[in-house]
Image (cartoon, rainbow, N blue to C red; front, side, top):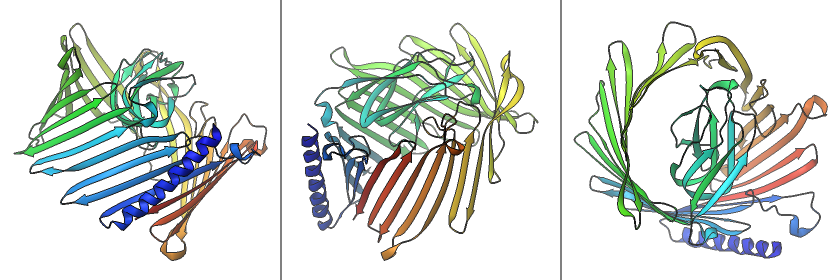
Length: 472
């Protein structure tokens, strides 16, 4: 089975290279070919030499621009074969701006699938890697436990693990998120507690619905200071659409409203999901008040008023406040924020310690991390150390030292070098050393880059990655 997978990906690599060369010869096309291979130096047999994880991949991006319209194709392959195919189109028809994408996940066939991942860790963040890029319909987080009834947490997603989008409202205390609509390409999902070092997520798992096929389209029309936008998603795991109107904006007032529909066949073709809107205003000495109202299928849900970064004259401390009215209750939430600034090469990570009364009572200041950064003659030094036993720089590692350098290589390209060393108090090595990563990228002109990375840990030479990228 492994040999067959190896032949499969080698064939895909050949097709990608040939397709890229053919596209580049066509003139108006542009694109990128990215290939990465992860080798396991501890395996003696050839069949196990190439790792089958996400570090072994091939990607082909092709773009075509004409008369103000942009068309694109994005394909990804790994050791299991063809994993993702996406086609995009964007442009304008008069005042209407359109953006559409069609996504396929060949590995799923023609249906949707449910993925469940569990995790238990005493950390402010739970991160889940789906292993591949999927079109995610919705996600639920269940069994979330935090250390205080006032602890707030939310769910966010990412395609690359670097840029994150929040997809849920803020939840407070222990509980479940319910079904959260995502409707986008996702690989990484996080449950994130946001009340500082004293907050943690424990004994939680997520259930994810991923679609084999999905079509998403957005349209936007702006005229006379009013913007009308719509979004439509048709996927094998669930379909929905929304319509948003944003009114004229000035310094004193902003307003918008959105109506959401679920498309469920054969129950109904247009099922109202919810209506919600926001408007911002200034009131007296308080600036930037945001009001949010929600109407669910059953009727009125809630209206809330919130303000951010209220300065009450206490150095380095501001407050956020939210007043929420629902059918049967009224709640007030006050949250203090610590703003230490970052004007020096030292960065202190700290949080305010709440007292028995919760966030409205501040009993102390907890310093849980220290960062140092310095640049000198093209070389950068960075250090990050966490002291609280909760935060981590990577895996179980609590401290990281990084040295980076950039310069010129041959043929007008760039050369970058980076080495990072990690420490873990559970290691019985000199200075608690745990792992060292070496990364080198060499540009061959402006169109090609060759890269390599080596990982050495307490088990020895554990991984060697080779990659190259060609653009035209």
